[in-house]
Length: 423
Image (cartoon, rainbow, N blue to C red; front, side, top):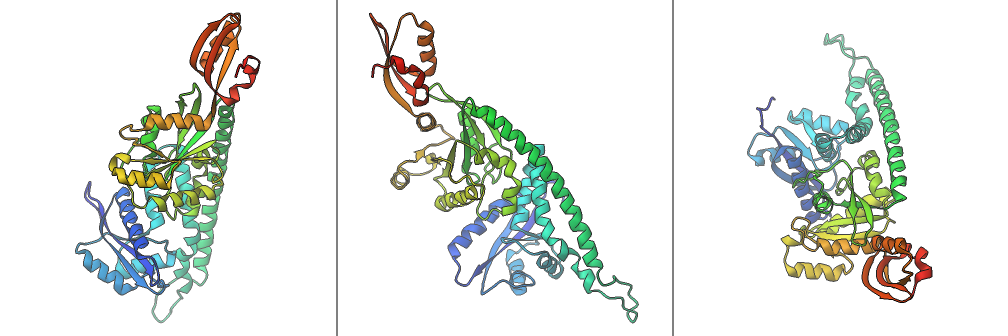
């Protein structure tokens, strides 16, 4: 069916919950699927969940339930979307039975990634994820040929036994060759990122912004760096890692990188495909974990982020927890969350509330400072000038022995000034 210009595809969303499953968690997952579907440019006609003892081996959900869901939607659907990964044979069985295209959750995410990829690196990573999704499903695409026979009585000329296996093997080899070439290209990109990172490490710290998708990372990134990274109230608005210089309050500088947002049950092969983009988080000196305090599921989302960080070996990197969007919640919610997370920062990236305080704490976290008094001989004007550029001068007095300066200075910069220490 051909859609008119500007017309959205319409979909029925279907989910499965075991008889002893968490229905509230399933409702949240379906609500997220609605948002994913919207981000993918597809209109949801309704979301329906079947509770059953186990999944149906042929059609995942019961055929009767799927048919009833289509009737309940009250409008003609263009496709069916499942909140679970389907096997190739399940998808084909459903399509054949209901004469409708079928997508699963991973395919919706891949569509979003495909539509949002802007740079060559992002497009390569999306293609790699698509190929890794397709590879295990190749066999079932052609399995029906192996079941067909040459029938003289029917007069039908059909495939010989084994043709499906041959075709699937040819397709599999083709996909594997493309995967190999893309991975080789991405390895070169990762190597370039590593080289650039080593050069940056010599001069400043590296910060990675991480968090659940739509937590406000890009809004905070723009606020801190005056960049113009795309900000949309949609999932996965940011796919490409963007880095900018960030001047800090203690005369220091850092490089901050915005990264792709995480999501619950993010497919492993998708995480693996975006290794180049996630490299910024993987090798940061500090991770700023941005959480949306206005989302009642923020604790679950924080746990999902930690799962992804662990999968890329970034869970041991020091973190700074930042609750964003405090302008959208009551003071009581902020107070309760602050009691639960006493070391967290509370900001609104959109309005700028508390961002300056957050920056001061960030600077102290990256470059711990100490307050000292120095006595510099009058003759060492270059040293005095250097201290002004290196530290925050709190007080200056002039004495017979020289210039007495009380400064707030990064501990790592103190060593060369040891001969001038008074206290």
